[in-house]
Length: 234
Image (cartoon, one colour):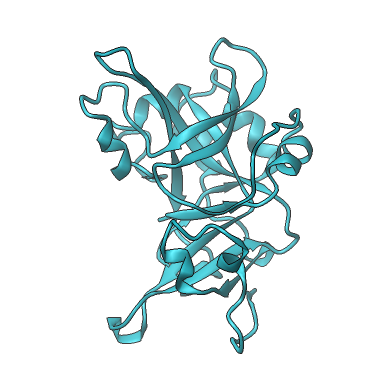
């Protein structure tokens, strides 16, 4: 699964990687957690061009009676997303790019006892990237509205399998247009995009357990542990 990630330079990510106007007022985030706002790129709901928006992390299906269900919908498995009732409508028509520049995974200790060790994972070249995401619009009987999202996950690549049995789907930039195209539907054209990202283009290193608490959201979260082995690289 993916339960935490970073977006340290949102301005650069939106203007350079996603070719969008700068969005003022976004601060660096070192520990983005479920139920918090995340930066997403999607096609404007009115059928227009790409837009950057803030979505609540944890998808609330349009048919849900209680929006609290979103806290359990932070990830969607790529293998079943097209069929699951909570995600299938969004998979057909409401796909998005969730902007990040790194994420965390927790490794279970040998023997299964003790605290899990968090690792920070990023692209070796350090550029921002996009998770494959879905978004949804929910309206309550009182007129309230929530726009929310989920991240797709897949099996781990050769780098991440030493840390966790799942990893988020990271899309290649050349696949952004296809993923956002609402005229494209179904697993046949989209399924090949939902694959593990090349391990040789990524790296991971152990970080402090400070990241376990969402209240800690500062550069300490991504600092490598002292005296640890070399970065995990392929």
